[in-house]
Length: 177
Image 1 (cartoon, helix red, strand yellow):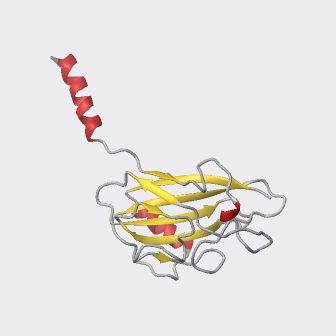
Image 2: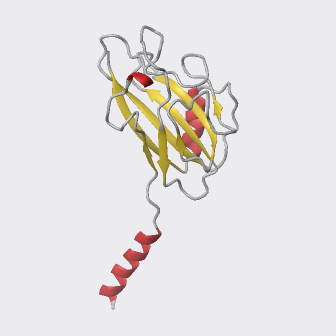
Image 3: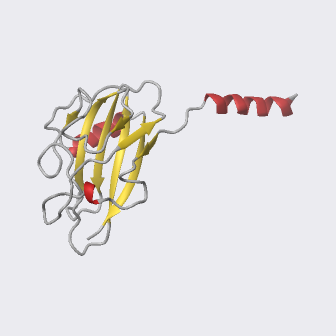
């Protein structure tokens, strides 16, 4: 009897377990290289400065909002560089089209200031001659919208998103010049 009970219990647990949250992008595939569209048009770089398309799935039950953030941990600042800080996306959001930042973000979304000092997506622009930098986009599933406004820094949004995240998913692409 015991030899049948264990596989049955294991099967029941596996069938009720939720899959981990996933994040994908055609413009910024995980492990790939950023395209011209995601490069900043400024600071010595010439690019499209468009936010990448994003699609996520398997958010946990109880998700009431999302935060989307793009960060370069290797920026020569001592603290990295926030390229995109968007939060309070509605909990039923599962995708953003390419170029959504500043144009077609879901109602209620707040795009707060980046390390460029402005809201919205700011493309990649690593220092000339530097080794390729990793650009990380993370989507956080949150139980509720964050109690922050458009003046919130990337560090503050990141702190609050991580502190309350039900789950998250990250993709990383690189760029050097």
